[in-house]
Length: 457
Ligand code: DUC
Ligand code: ZN
Image 1: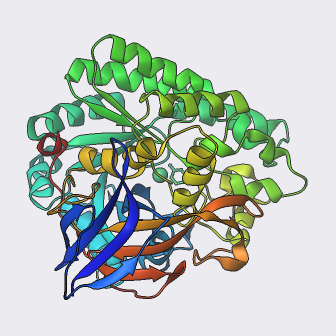
Image 2 (image 1 turned 30 degrees about the vertical axis):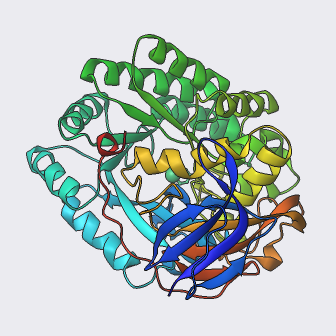
């Protein structure tokens, strides 16, 4: 079916211009002013902004963690993502200790295949290193898994030697690693101290995961990457101190990419001091920081020091959070975010003048598409690209509420927040999947085999 989106303003990484978009066979066939096509279904998008479908390169759906499993699986998570304008997610497949990467990938395909409503790809988390895993890197690249995740904390963590060896191996095939940077040793010591002093509540969570522990790990990672001569991605950056380490590495000539998330831009650590157990809903790692950190991250987005905004969507119900009622280290870490990222960044970023539309487009679509080997198939509105399109009505005001969400949890981190703008329509490869801000078609998500960042420069 042909579709002509007429009268909107089309956003790219360079700016915004009035243009019509003609969609044929799931792809964009033409963009320009005054387009016509006799047999196309014409949709008026006058007064609306058209972005490339957003890409969320950091989700955790159906993840077994902290003795439980995330509340969102691929069915609910990708549906919520679509409603939030995200047409592609990249989730973290995991090679658990003793497994091959092929087994890890197969497990994640089982979780996602046939259940997804938006397109999806996988990173591969590597939790150990040996000759067989080394060989499997080529298989992963061939399977379209071109980015890898390393943890410097948690029981999935890898040591410095392993980080160095993996970075060096990935460089040969133009694979890239995204790294969770926190110093696990000092966190363990601080947690022991807090527990010994009887400080078992939520307030101990940020105190035992300080920004210095993040900055130390970032600094170490970047020195390892320097020695390996490899590019690297710092995922979910939260702090000024961490960004300083990145500035220094770039000044040395290193290639460093940075991701942050809406929660680190819009929430601060005072939430952990809310009465009772309320702060548990905001427990994530690294934790929320200070208003000064938020400001620095916004500046980093504006100045191009930070390349992508993802969500780290890792959702748990309030009941699940109570696993850590008597011990803050047992609170499952993570928050939902896929349903609200797009509109929060539009409302808090563009409407409030912290970002312009082109910057938002780069941060949520173009840059992740380039970095994760999807460009120009995705991440841009151009002839030949997938017709993944987000239509935002900038004139509507809305209020974020758990009562009105697809995300499978009983709270919304941004409950009650007024936002300007609403994601009215979403097209996934030309199919209308969201209309009037409601998901109208599900189950169309396909696995996307990705190229490398080198393919997309
Ligand atoms: N941080 C979280 O809070 N949850 C999941 C993984 C992560 O890095
Ligand atoms: Zn994560």
